[in-house]
Image 1: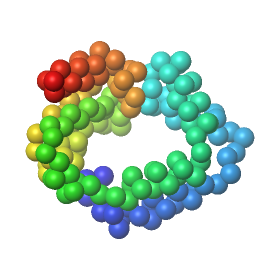
Image 2 (image 1 turned 45 degrees about the vertical axis):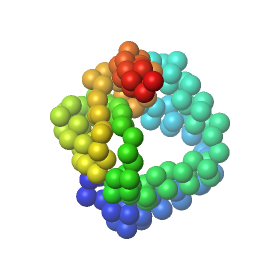
Image 3 (image 1 turned 135 degrees about the vertical axis):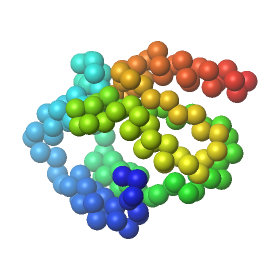
Image 4 (image 1 turned 30 degrees about the vertical axis):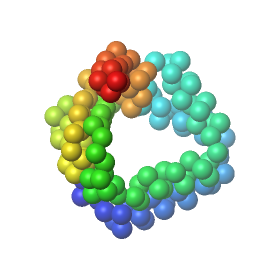
Length: 149
């Protein structure tokens, strides 16, 4: 949401936090499984992520999500002086009109204040790219780690 501000997103984030803080329903695990199919490809990884969700403390997750949504770091990142690798994904949103380029542009806009950013998008991984496109993930990660030594 490139045009979002902390104030404009706050009501949405508060609503999300309030909903997440409600007692979990009997269908919570099934709902998480449905959601994770849009974020993970392999069935065993979906099951792992669902289990992580089930095992997580709801209040902690709700507060963490709220804080992520309500703290705009786009300007604050300008103080970072280290080279920064950003890995992203887009393919899960292809059915909604997303393209590699449209998502890359959206990511790039988030990092305009951060010099030295390298941005790469996987063309096959969903949200959990370390599972869905392991080769892509480690290719970029290993390159940065080797260069740092």
